[in-house]
Length: 106
Image (cartoon, rainbow, N blue to C red; front, side, top):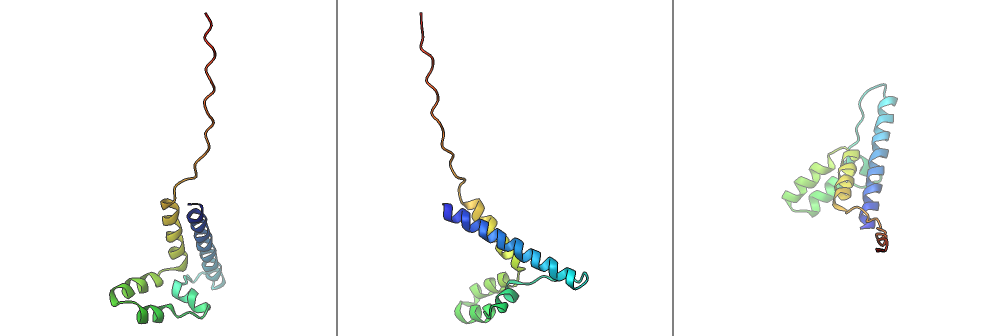
């Protein structure tokens, strides 16, 4: 379960970085709102996700995937990170045994 919690933390950090990049781009454009979709982010790396999804998936699943690809990048990674964090159980804390009771003297 450690891997799921670690992966959720990484996804949330990536989401915050993408949100920060959108804020910086908005400030650079003098207040004009800039929100990059996941498709635009993947295109920066040369991956045409929309075309790949349309050509490899059945139409019903492709429509859902294209909708998710159209969401803001920070929202996609952030929601996935939060869902994984909620699924993974909290780490167990070791409990110390209770101290033995004092001896009974009569």
